[in-house]
Image (cartoon, rainbow, N blue to C red; front, side):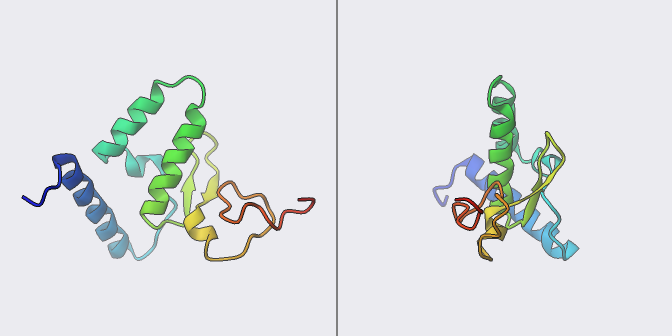
Length: 114
């Protein structure tokens, strides 16, 4: 064996499936909650988040953002608002736009009045 755990192998296989699907489609659409709920390791995280009362919305957004960046997606759909949200993966490719993006990797340095 290569020292990888069963869940690690499953995660690696899931990432490969997603990468293959992206290559076949030719386009990287915004990541949706449905896109990650089939991944067992992510599904477990979602179940744990569901048990939270306070902070659930933020926790789901954090998970969606994390998964979208791992999959090199420019955007994800916020499950609570259905808004399309730019990821840090996308925003790192350009300067801060000054619009207070949720995942601004530039610490909102071009936001007026800052």
